[in-house]
Image (tube, rainbow over all chains, first blue to last red; front, side, top):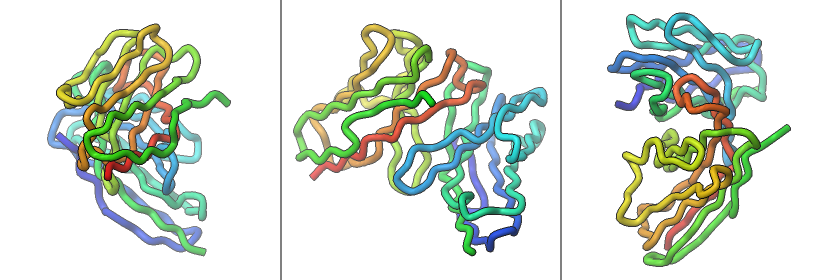
Length: 111
Length: 116
């Protein structure tokens, strides 16, 4: 079951904040966040695991609500380099299960 | 910094022809993934290898797609015959161990396939 991301797109001015949400209808083991710039490969940002463990960038913050099967990615004081499409990937059932990615959120940061 | 290598970067082929993509994962990474990404969508897993063994190929259209990782290092994804609906970006990724849900995955630059 594909996770649902919201919003589909957001436009910011440099320095503004944004929140990107990811929700699933299935119980989650993990949530991954990736950023993809146009024509480039997705780049790893963060993993949030059931039980509270997190791995990822120091400057990126995110939350994982296991009961609600939701995750949010917080982008503060946005920079031009933050522009791109953000994907969440959800893993269910344990550490060996595959990721299912959402459709993405297009973030545009303008000067 | 180690990267996942893929070739070719772009491929244009005619319907019903065969096409092959190659991926070389980061050295030491046991797990290799092939994803398909349609424009405007997130990546969709086609096949996952743990060393040379297939762990998950449930979404691989086996009537036309095949994948192998013979020595547990590099991998080839083949489509024969190609159909118009196969036009997409084909991404290869690798991770250190076999925990798809808990390991960070490193993606290659992808192969953009256009079927005419």
